Length: 129
Image (tube, rainbow, N blue to C red):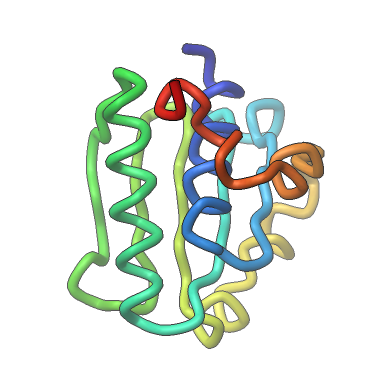
């Protein structure tokens, strides 16, 4: 799985659990820390954890294991490190405070409109067989 495919799979997992304001930002050309950031907001602390859990579950099912997780106990910002893809799941307040999109504004936003508009049952079609 390429880093873009991993980022898109993470975005699908976030959509599946109704993550808000999901962004995929390509940072490969401006940083060596990763190829992509995937950023999403949860509506509550429980939702933030649910989003992070679903990303980990879905990517693990695709054969992509998380390298490191930070912030799981904090409830406001959970980071899942997949080496080439870093997933950030925020509470509304934390996302506004840290403003990663502003910090990484030189990165290229990846269009995920197709994922956001996809019916839920089509996000992971292999399960619907």
